[in-house]
Each structure stands twice: as structure tokens, then as C-alpha cells.
Length: 411
Ligand SMILES: Cc1cc2nc3c(=O)[nH]c(=O)nc-3n(C[C@H](O)[C@H](O)[C@H](O)COP(=O)(O)OP(=O)(O)OC[C@H]3O[C@@H](n4cnc5c(N)ncnc54)[C@H](O)[C@@H]3O)c2cc1C
Figure (cartoon, helix red, strand yellow):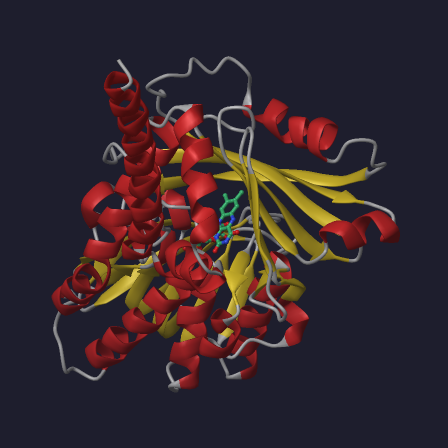
């Protein structure tokens, strides 16, 4: 039986980055992925701010396209925050994960594609991991000192198949990858466009992101909870198609593929972070932020933190991962709770009119403010817009009062 220091299950951004960090540190690592290739589950829209590329030292080859303008469109309002230079990228999600896996291999680690994790059991000091090679059906066992659950929403290691899981806040997303003519693509090639409001997507938001090669990612995501005002009858797919018919009006396109996925978020960061020598990372511990469902950057950051604790564990400096759980909770709880609250209000409580109004008042915020709100969850910046709104309200009341006073004094 082959022996490893660390076995990471799931070669998503979190698992790939964790394995990359650990192989770089000289650990013997095995990274396992159930799919044969990364194209088979190329599900993420994968937009990210520019800083992600530098923070994780990622090459140009993993980028589908850069974007430099932020656009928000509601039922009746459209706001654009242009920038003279790129603000972020849309990853080629398959290439990103492929790059991380290749890094693992080039640093001496192993990557086994097409292997499904089945179960683990403890044998004295070590853990035996049972895997199934999907093409042959062969069951293989490996031994490890640390086992990492990086299986995303499945949380396949922390919870066995039959074990009940907590009641998550879930969101479902569908995305079409479409190809346009070069001329039509140019119109959208620099913009990260978000669609809010009841016309476009009552219980979430829709988007159009540039993907390079004259391709756009067109998608919709919805929270799987009822809306306070809207009784949504249409299915999710019809909202994606609405963008094609009512926004990209009269633009010929070819559908390259459809894909989608689910987010499963545990409110209050109450996930199971570790059990003995098993540790969970990425979406398996709700590292996806519920304001907009961004999870790649956060999963990779969380993977780096976890990798530090794993090294300490292997070096005998710590005997469990309690410090890891505490670290994550300290780092993320406040921001994650704030984002969840903001997301739930925006997507499930606001009337269409208040979404229009809210976005209208965002016009007074700078591009820097908008980036801080959307990507650093700095909601204090919204006060500027709230202040403008309150001033507008105050002015309106004041004018009405003045008119009334004038008309009374005329009698
Ligand atoms: C439609 C959609 C759009 C999104 N858009 C964005 C976006 O624009 N920007 C952004 O930052 N985030 C986005 N996200 C979220 C982001 O994709 C996730 O947060 C991120 O992929 C989580 O990374 P992860 O490594 O934790 O998990 P995952 O990426 O889910 O990876 C888990 C891996 O584990 C494998 N696995 C699962 N079970 C087993 C098993 N039993 N055996 C072996 N392997 C297994 C899976 O095949 C998968 O490859 C989006 C998500 C969806 C669904």
C-alpha cells in the first residue's frame, strides 16, 4: 500500500492549492479527483479581482479574459463604473485547476484523476483511504497521516453518504457558454455585468462575463428559499434565456455548452472543520461568500492557512486542528455573517422598486467604493449612498413643507 503524508480529496481550487503548498514545502502528497479531466466539471463562472493572480502567483495561461468595467443592471436602472485598466479576470476554470495539479506533480506530488473517494478508516496511528478507480472499478487503498476534505459542497469525507448533514443555505446556478461574432463580442469584452431585480432574477442575480475567444458566460443563480414578495414561477434556465432574448437582443450566438452547480453554505461558520487527523477546506467549510457566491479566491486563501496547520501537525508541533478552526472563525466570521445578511436581504426581501432605488444611489459611489463593497465586503462604504438617499428624502420633505407653508401664508 502506498503511503503519503497528506491525501487531499478533491482537485478544486482549494484542494489544488492546498496540495501545491504542501508539495512545495516538501511533503509527500496525493491529490485525488473523481473526474478524468478538468473539462468534465468546468462549472464555475470564475470571476475574480486582479489581486488573486498575484496573491497565488498564477500565470496568464489560466485566464480566460480580463475585465475592467463594473456594470449593474436592474429592472429600470443601469449603472456603470468604468476603469482605464483591468480590475480583474475571469478564469478558465478548467485551466486554473489543471495548472494547480500540474504544479503539484512538478513539485514531486501525485495527482490521480478519475478516482472517487469512498471512505476512510483508522488503523493504529494512520488512516487508510479507500478509492475507486472509475474506469476499471478497481478499489485501491492508500495510507496517510493527514486526510483533507476538499470535496466542495459534497463534504464527502466529513460526512459519510448516509450521515445527515446540517440544513444549509443553498443556491443553484446555471450558466451557458456562448460564442458571438468578434464585433459583437467587443461590446461586452471589458465588462463584468450583474443583473439584479425581479425582472432579471428575483431570488438571486444573473450575469454576463467575458471569457475571451469571442465567448461570454451567461448565467443565473438563485437562493433556494422563498422571496418575501415574489412568487417565482419560472425555472432558473428561463432567466438565463431571458438574458439571451431580452438583453443580448438580436445578437446571433452559438451555445458552446451549459453547466451549473450548487453552493451549500452553513450559516455562522458552523461546519465541521476537523476530526482527529482529518481537516476540511474550501466550500466544504463554506468558504464561498454569500454576497455574490465568490469562492475561488477564498477557498485558495483558506487552503494556504490549512496547509500551515497541516505542516505543524506533521512536524509534531500541534496534535489537532483546533487552532485552524479558531483561526478561520476569527478571520472570516464577521465578514461572512455581514455578507450573508446583506445577500439574504438583497435577494429575498427587497421590493423591485427598492432594488432600483438602491442601485440608483450607488451612482454616487466611486469605482474604488464599488470594488471594496463587492470584493472586500466593506459595507460601510454603502453609507455614502445611504446618506445621499436620506438627503434626497429630506430635501423632498422640505420642499413639500415649504410649498405647504407658502400656500397657507397666501390665505
Ligand atoms: C455556477 C457557479 C458559478 C460560480 N462563479 C464563481 C465566480 O464567478 N467566482 C468565484 O470566485 N466563485 C464562483 N463560484 C464558486 C466557486 O466555483 C467555488 O466556491 C469553488 O469552486 C470552491 O472550490 P473548492 O475547491 O472548495 O470546491 P470545488 O471547486 O467544488 O471542488 C471540489 C472537487 O472535489 C471533487 N470531488 C467531490 N467529491 C469527490 C469524491 N467523492 N472523490 C473525489 N473527488 C471528489 C469534485 O469533483 C471537485 O472537483 C461559482 C460556483 C458555481 C456553482
